[in-house]
Amino acid sequence: MEMEMKEEVSVVELNASVERLTAAAEMLEQVVERLSAAEAKIAELQTELQARAEVSHAGRKTMPGSTASLLAKHDGEAVETGALDAALTGLSLEQRIAVKAQLMRAGLVG
Image (cartoon, rainbow, N blue to C red):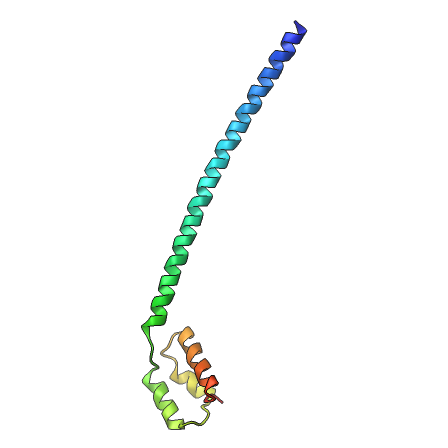
């Protein structure tokens, strides 16, 4: 009789353990689903950011007229940084950096 009670207790404990493990597995499945959705959202946002970056880089390929006239006035001489900054105010930060880099490579920025 004592042996039967121990077996019943073991079965009850085993069933409780199985229920806890089942609940934990269900929670893990929910976490995996949320992580998968989050990764998909991140991938979608990365694609959108890349598309926006391509559009912004393709938008303007020429420099403003004020910059062109500033460079024409100096005709191969180095341009002061302050004057160049003033001439580039119409450009975005990325475009200003690109123009300055090109002018530095050409030796036109003093």
